[in-house]
Amino acid sequence: MANNVPPNTTKQETGKEFDFTRADFERVRGLIYQRAGISLADSKQEMVYSRLARRLRANGIATFASYLDALEAGRMPAEWESFTNALTTNLTSFFREAHHFPLLAEHALKRRAGHGGPLTIWCSASSTGEEPYSIAMTVCEAFDTLTPPVQIIATDIDTNVLATAGAGVYPIERVDKMEQARLRRFFLKGKGAQEGLVRVRPELRQLITFRQLNLLADGWDLKGPFDAIFCRNVMIYFDKATQRKILARFVPLMKPEALLFAGHSENFLYVSDALRLRGKTVYELNHG
Image (cartoon, rainbow, N blue to C red; front, side, top):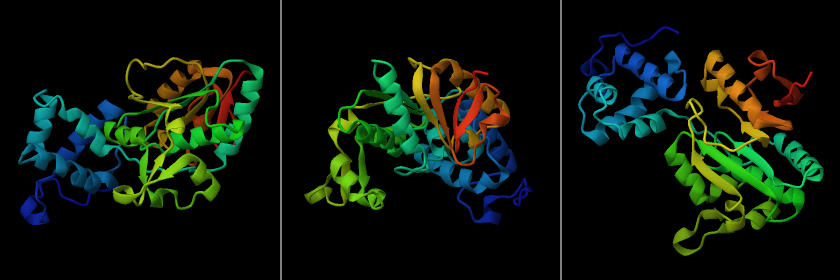
């Protein structure tokens, strides 16, 4: 896609608070790809400006070039986390792509019948927590208890969203489409100063361990293998080479009958022959 802003456009010409040249955008592109594997399209230039302009203000820096120079020179090591957090996208909701959850419930009961240990599930892009809590609710409903035999690890690169996930407190609008019986079973409604908010029940929260993890990191501090891995709407931000690398690392973390859940627009068959389709955007190991 052609860039609509000439490379030497100034803030006087654009009316923006900061200069943001094509060269600045290309530097940001390179840095976020190195740090998080995210491939930014040309169409994301305005989004990048908007999100990183806040970081310039927060640090009292006058230009994008100075900000990026400071990052690359190691003068603001703590800022890398905020830089990465600013550029990650966290669109999520409870029971998003709902067709996955009945299959997860069926799989959980089947796996539990086959072995005595707890189920192990990894949610690799927790975001603000709606996905791992949906997983936990599904398993609770499958076993008809708030203390099912499950261990859920929920990870994300973004520390801000992990803090929200760990707190488990949401505006009531986030659950307005949830069945009332499910809402009553798994959430507490706020009163007084907390009115308009809901909190997940402590029993649900205790099923999940939240942890920061960068899928591009050389080592993952994870103890597998897992009965199920959720990696939904994450791979779309990576190029094919990065997708292939991550999927190759998933395979040894999957139990022989494990399921891998993907997003609605993701097709892993094009990047890995170690997997085969089990259902709609659900994969299993290809033992053939």
